[in-house]
Length: 373
Image 1 (cartoon, rainbow, N blue to C red):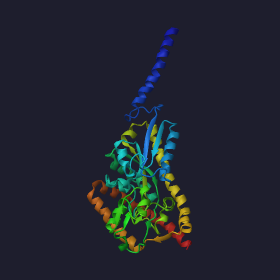
Image 2: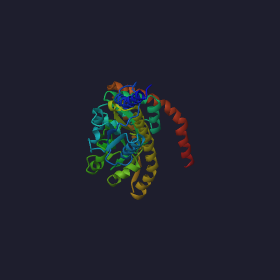
Image 3: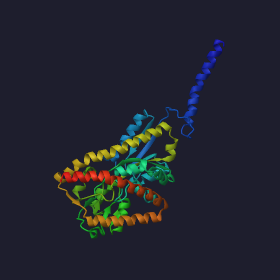
Image 4: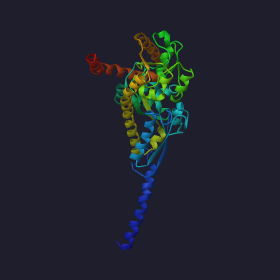
């Protein structure tokens, strides 16, 4: 080959390389057969939460996820985080993600029960599974496929986003000594826990986290549940409520979530999809660890520094609520086919898992309790 022809061919080949990369970048994410080529294309996404801006733990983790994604993608993906009410109202996060107004959201699935009743099973079921069991069901027991099925028609893709662990029973300005004390009680409690209270004669009220304090202070509600000592202390409930009850029968292991607009997620390059997924899984582990690490210290603060009166629900009340919880569940699965399908999976897993837990977790805790008197 003559030297000038060789140089000409090399120059044309060099020009073709950027064109090929541009073509691959354009096709990226359009189908499973698309080449997985990492390009320098920038993605600017928005994440809105149901939690107030800069909210401890639950709001913090949204910002942490944004930082992790930015670092892992080497700046190719930048997520701007908005607290509840900054971009959309706190309880309209699901709608915003579904419509594509934002790409990502953070909240808990029982907040969208009006649109998807079956979504509640992926947050908390009264007298149901704890955090460890919920994670096992969703990740290893078939729960995740059902979760995707419930959200699919809304163009939403769910991800595990953290678990609070067993919650406290709530803050009350009067003692609860019998089921009669629940009648007419206006209490902030979402999801199936709210339906259970309603069946017991109470009046459940759903307000966003940032509105609970003023609602309780002004008498709009008589009682509220939230999470546990760490968050409850930060929320200041001890200043306006006298009695702090346990256990959290209504939310024994509340699963929070990240959600993505499915169409937008599917268009992402495969590596960015994996980066987002890994960031959400990291968040899932961090939240439960953070609550477990802080709740003991803040329980001491509430009791010893703020003189909060700790109470336990009488067994009579817990037994009565268990009956009304069963009624609420039967009503839900009787009215909604997909709820029936999800609950069948949930309950089958719970029963099998509880046999295992009886031999291990429960037996261990009972032994320790006996040893410690």
